Image 1 (tube, rainbow, N blue to C red):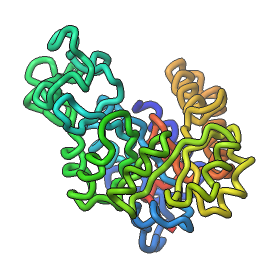
Image 2: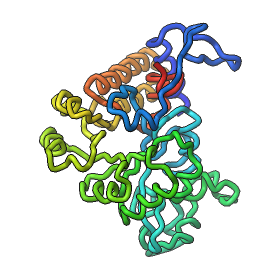
Image 3: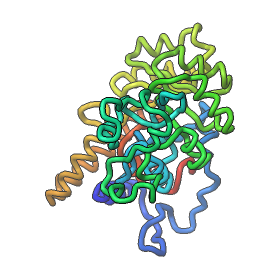
Length: 334
């Protein structure tokens, strides 16, 4: 990942022109003496269909070397300037909302040895879930010394420990929608939540608790977009829809007219931005710098094409790399 960051940062410098050097030898991405002006707050932009800034969203909170869906990963993303985190919400056997992508905990934790034959999140109590140890070498000896890294978090912990201006894109996996919405309400966090689900009934259940809640449905094709724009879905107050690059340009005009912004996955397609970032990393490791430069340029072009096709949020495992290209001076700068 360090190689990728250096690679993409160099690409950004080429695209953004001259920069000034900071005291630590880095670059701040601005012209000397430039007045950046006030930044648009992420929570303001999320709710404003006229806001044209592009959200970079860290898929599962991945921004480097920290394991997915952990507080360590989320805080790492914040430090690297990523304005949105995608998190996966589930419910334990005793009804607590926790963060875990898979229904089975064995891929990312020691659940198979700790609770053999009982490794689904909804089979574990909250106490059992919190006792799980993340599969990371740094957690082997004394996992309790670093709980942000070594234990999976609850949703309440994420709300409390992340910055109030960090947008949380909640990918709802299972559980009680009203309960999750109640936690958002209790935390006074409605303005920082983008609630995502393919089931429109779940979006309505969320809005029943939080009438001002911002929800995002999935649209698999252009016909699904037309369905979302239908009159019978006006109650959802849609501002966002998760679409795909393959048909985004086709629906862009209709979505803009409806003040509906598009969210893409940066890895979608055979020539996606993420694909070229990975290819450039491999070329760099092989010391093929000419090929590396070619792949860097392709990554940049793929990223720009998604934006040109209407993307105003981009999910990626390479969030910090996107940030360095799109807004090295921070989100929301003019």
